[in-house]
Length: 247
Ligand code: NDP
Image (cartoon, rainbow, N blue to C red; front, side):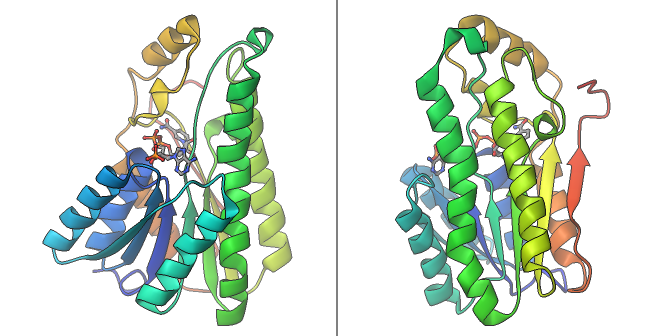
C-alpha cells in the first residue's frame, strides 16, 4: 500500500492493454480503486477479475474515447461506484506510421480523434468533478515523439503528441492550485502500439525500432511516482526511455 495512492479513485482510458493495463495492476496493488475504459470488453473484464482476485478494487466500462458522452459516462461510473474521482489518466492512443506522401487521411483522422480529442474529452469529463471537489490530478500520456518529430513516418503521430504536451501545459497553467497536471513522455515501451501501422515499410521500421523496448510497468511506476507526491507537489513532466534509445 502507498500512503498517498491507497484509497484514491483512478480512471484509466486505454486500459485494455500495454501501459494502461500495467498501470491498472500497479495502482491497484498500491491500494487505488481503478476504473478502466477501452473498447475491448473481454480484456477489461479479465483485468478487473485479476485485480479483484488479488483483493483489489476495480470496475470497467466499455468506452470509446472519440465519443465525449462515453468518456463522461466512465467518469460518472467512478464517482457513483467509489464516491469521488482523484486521478484521470488519459492514456488511450494509436500510432499509425507512414510517410505523409501516402496521404493516409483516415489514419490521420483516427490519431487526431483518439490521441488529441480523446484527451480533451477526458479533461472535459473530469474537470467539473475536480473543480467541485477542489482537488484532482490529470495524467496525460504524450511521448518522446511529443518532444522531437518522429520523421519520416511519424509526423502526424508526433503532431498529436506535441498537442497533448501543449494542452497539458496550458491546462496546468489554467487550473493551477488544487488540481495537478502531469504529462508522461515515454520512449519505446513494449505494448500493442507497434502494430498500428498499415504501411508495410513503416511497420517493418517500427518492428525493428521496438526490438529495444522497456516493459510497460516502467511507465506504471512513473505514474505512481507522480500520484504519490504530497498535494502541494505537482510533477509536471516525466520523460523515460530505454537506457540505450537514441531517439
Ligand atoms: P496499446 O496499443 O497496447 O494500448 C492502447 C490502448 O488504447 C488500448 O487499451 C486500446 O484499447 C486503447 N484505445 C485505442 N483506441 C481507443 C478508443 N477509440 N477508445 C478507447 N480506447 C482506445 O499501446 P500503449 O499501451 O503503448 O499506448 C498507450 C499510450 O501510450 C498511447 O497514448 C501511446 O501513444 C502512448 N505511448 C506509448 C509508447 C510505446 O512505445 N508503447 C511510447 C510513448 C507513448 P481498445 O483497443 O480495447 O479500445
